[in-house]
Length: 166
Image (cartoon, rainbow, N blue to C red):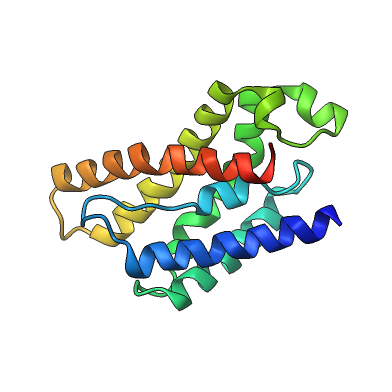
């Protein structure tokens, strides 16, 4: 029964991301994305190749139903799938993987979860902003977009992780 809840909430969050992209753009400098959180909440024993494949498919689905260019979210999300296990091991240590536990905000602590979401959002947005600007935007507007997007998306990602792994 727990797997059905996970899949249902996962699909709802994908729809929420599509709605955020289509109907609730805050400004041209602020992007809100829950996609790094959706990759983070995968089971801890998920291998990087499987996480990268799921990242690609998830990004492609979101791009297909959104107003953006097809493939931009996929391109930005695949590195998140690649570094996910290294970030989990670096922030939470080996006790999480050795015991076979799942991520839990309550058990592992909010500061560590904020740091994990911050790192994954930074990886996502550095690729996304660089690809989106593609040399046509000056450095400072791109840096502002990167910083503001991380500032807004990190708390949103922590909230999403909390919904999946209380």
